[in-house]
Length: 158
Image 1 (tube, helix red, strand yellow):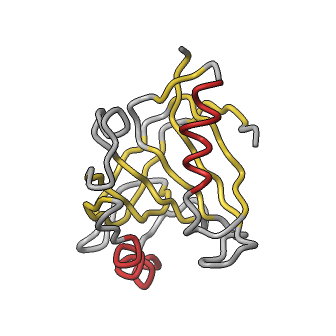
Image 2 (cartoon, one colour):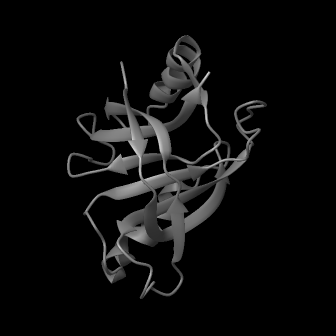
């Protein structure tokens, strides 16, 4: 699987977040709290859902399933006015990203193993210390092997 390389412009997001680890993965809880309320958000730019992962700089250097990270369920907005109660704003920094078109179950983590252990070491890039994210567009179907999404991995030249 060969990614496309894109320069992302800064994005404004509104959503909710939870701290979790792979050992204590609360992704279902996060989305169950966000999805019923997403229509309260105004000024959204697309109907795409965005799942953001914010890690400590050492997260992948000394990787363990118990390493904590922050996970966001969000949508992109044009402005930060009228943020619904109990939701927050997040600015997704722009920069260089490897974008993988993924088709398959959202519970199959082998795509991330491939990206981090096979593609990245043989590429001209290293991980950049910025959030990783997935764009869940109209072809995304939760728990469906025909689901499609984009996986955005922050990179910089070696």
